[in-house]
Each structure stands twice: as C-alpha cells, then as structure tokens.
Image 1 (tube, one colour):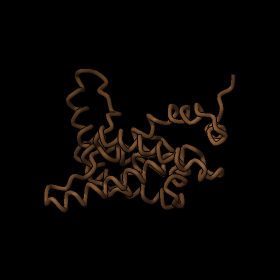
Image 2 (cartoon, one colour; image 1 turned 90 degrees about the vertical axis):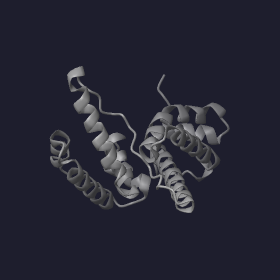
Image 3 (cartoon, one colour; image 1 turned 60 degrees about the vertical axis):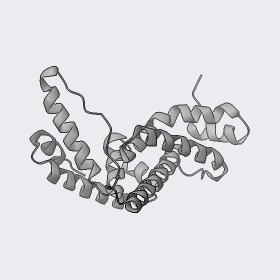
Length: 197
C-alpha cells in the first residue's frame, strides 16, 4: 500500500483523523529535534522546542498553506521556536549578569573512521562545534539546514521565508567565516574551502 503524502495526512487530520497527525510527528520528529539541537545545543531544550513545534503545528493546522510543503512549514515553526528560546536565554543572561548562555552546536555527525583517528576526529568535531556556535543565529541556522539537515536551497528559502539568493549569500558568508576559524585544522579547512555554490 502506498504511503500517504504529508499533505494528504494534513487533510486527513483536518477531517478529524486522530492518527494522521501522529504519523506526521513520527515522520518528522527526529529531523526537527536535530535542527533544534543544532540551534540550541541542549538536548533538554531541543526536546522542549520539538514538543512545542508539534503542539503549535497541531493548533495551527487550519493555517497551513497548501502551496508550501509540510516539511518546510514544520521547519519554519521549529526555527521560530528556537529563536524565541535563544532570545529568552539572552535576556535571562543579561538580567543575571552571568556569562551569555548562547546556543552551542551539538550534532555528532562526524565519526572516527578507526580508533587511530579518534583523537584527531574529536578535535575536528570540537573545532567545528565551536566555529558553528560562534556564527550569528541567522547564519548558523542556514548552515545547519544545508550541511546537516541536507535541505535544498529552495526548501531553506521556503522555511525561512527568504529569497533563495539570500539563503545562498548567508551560506557563503557562514562557510567563509567557518573556513577562517578552521584553517588551522587543515582537513576541515580544506573541506570548507573547496565548497562551491
């Protein structure tokens, strides 16, 4: 039996099918969680943001525009949730005069190929984390969506409600900044230096 599309599931959910929205959650929960984790850096915060994303989507199901993809719509809600949380954290940090508690990049997508490379791989992962975390939020979210979520430029543009040219420009700027920060780690630096758009 052919699987229903995301859009068909939304239609069924709107018609009162209680299981349909659950299926949308099952399909997209992990991707939304990883996006939130990349932006927020905390598993607890990412879980909360993921839960809030799906609650918000369910509450606003009637507002889903049929011309957009469900995935883009969900990613947009998640990005907004993360930005709201990051702003709240910044305000709290300023009010308490503590160290800024900014987002920390926390995706573990790099794996050591063998035990002999483990130390080098760890250093690279940490360097990439620090470099991505240091990016401004509007650049960080584009890097996470393109490089880790593997979304297309068009999907990112729809999600962020930006022209494709702006998305490409932000990614170019972000990767340029990453390359500058990572140039002392030759392998990672060369990888980012070789990117073309």
